[in-house]
Amino acid sequence: MLDRKRALAIALVGIFLASLSHLEKTGYFAKKECALVARVIDGDTFVLSDGRRVRLLSINAPEKEEYYWAESKAALEKLVSGKEVCLERDVVPVDKYGRLLRYVYANGTFVNLYLVRNGFAKASFVPPNLKYMQAFIEAEAFAIENSLGMWRRKSEYYGCFKITGVKLEGRDEHVTLKNVCNFPIRMLNWLVEDEGKNLVRIRDDIIVPPNGNVTLYSSEPRSMEGGLLHRGKIVYLGNYPLWDNDGDLFVLRDPRNSLVIAERILQSS
Figure 1 (cartoon, rainbow, N blue to C red):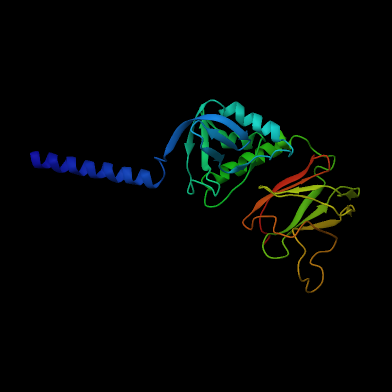
Figure 2: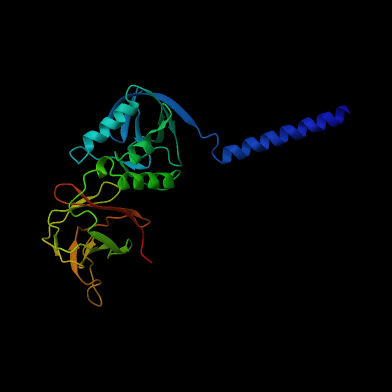
């Protein structure tokens, strides 16, 4: 009887240890550190009481002097300033500047996700830190659809452009738009943004007629074999790739920073 009990006990210990190993591999015991926030730098960065800087994962808040910077910073201050927060790592824990890359929790609120869902920041992803990617994409879509935060101010041209073509790889990277409104639209000094830090102003005095197309190239192709790749107006935004090859956020604003279109783009088939 004793040997049977001992064997049963050993088996149960084995099952318990195997379960612990499985939970660790699946991230159930993801290491979290809690610390006090000393001050907020902007809408996605703050400093801990021991001097370490934390950069919130999967979001990008406006830089100083950019539209909605003050509101974004104030939102993060309200959530974390002077409070204890808990920090969760993803695959890469530190960026090239030495900042901690973390998902942040304060008083039961998933801070990163809250900022995106309420329009204080865009969703932004740097592989391999993609643990909650789908949740952030859905939160961003919710904020845009419900005109929250930085997505609140809609242009008179909102809804006038439909994305009809996308190429995110190669030297002729571009996004093609169609004017679906019944009047011509002038695009001089409009702003093109991505999910990251790229912000480009359209310097060409382009007027897109009703049902007309305009193709925004991130840079001028070195060769255009076979003629122009698209019919309609063409704009060259700069001299370097603008959008991530695996998908990005395309944002177009008028000269008053009012939103014309904000939509996630993927490589067209």
